[in-house]
Amino acid sequence: MERKLSEASRRATPSPIQQLSHLAQRVGAVNLAEGFPDFPAPVHVKAAAAVAIAADLNQYRHVQGICDVLAETMKRDHGLHVDPLTDFAICCGQSEAFAVAIFAITDPGDEVLLFDPAYETYQTCIELARGVPVYVPLDPPSWTLNGDKFLKSFTSRTKAVILNSPHNPTGKVFSKEDLLIISEACQKMDCFAITDEVYEYITYDENKHISLASLPGMQERTIITSSLSKTYSVTGWRIGWACAVANIAAAIRNIHVKLTDSAPAPFQEAALIALTSTPDYYESLKKDYAMRRDFILQLLKNYGFHISFEPQGSVFVFAELPKSWQISDIDFMTNLITNAGVAAVPGSGFFHTDPDDQSYHHRYVRFAFCKSDETLKAAAQKMMKPTESNGRVLHDSK
Image (tube, rainbow, N blue to C red; front, side, top):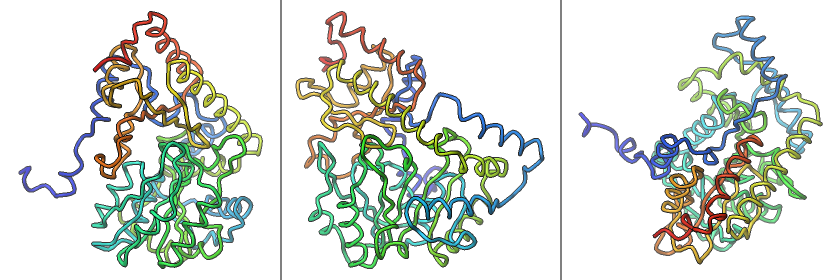
């Protein structure tokens, strides 16, 4: 019966990243690959979930208070005026919010622009909707948006632009100048924008997250997606949302209800507590992540990486292999897992444009630093060993 499977399912094959994950599990490698925290979620948020479960709030449910709080937050942070009664869909994580947003706007043959490198889930959602992903490369090493390349990527079939900022995997925070280029193009070509803003509270130095929807003329054509996952360290709870003007949000809700009916009820109740955390929570979040970022940057520099772009936001470092290391990202990671017992993600899995034209596609590795101090120190200890022995086993393997 395998031949009767859909074309979409046949395209969704295991990637080298998944194969390396299995290898990492077999050898018990320190996990700097996956973007989920291995430290505890905030006590007050966990307690709220426990109270909700004990109170038997365990059935299908829509917690309107989440929308009310989000509307206040968007007005405070971005100057957006949204109606909490009509402009939100509470979904099973940002992943579902993004998927249903794509399903709500995409017809067969519609083109959707994405910035490359990109998180792989976006392409799958577009293809399931019978759309066509079109990749616009960001220019390394600083992952610069080339306005000319971007504008030339539009056609009469372009339906939407996807913007993930702060960006996975590079850590880029799109600047106001970048956003102006994107917003002007979206308005000129009369297309949607879908944003993934899950790292909105995790930015560094003077970098500040700006929602694309806050730019003039963009709120009516932008679908914002985000979630609790990264800000509150609850990636397994699956509470996310889409925010858009009423008629678009209604279309998203209608599809969401047909797919999953509702997001997990007790975790919606806990979301109310999380989203009303005091300002010092967010200040502490940024401070703690800045220290983790600085730790892993120093670790990678000590190991021999040349860091040409430090993350401006998110929980990832996208580190380039030095030119003297004549090895691909996948071979490097296989050796790092096998010989040092540390796992990260080969960067080639995030690139989608023609690798024959882009020689750097196999030269990057993504390290996640949303990890406990103990995990980061364990990784540092393991990655020190080859350097101390002066063997360069990991660097020089062919």
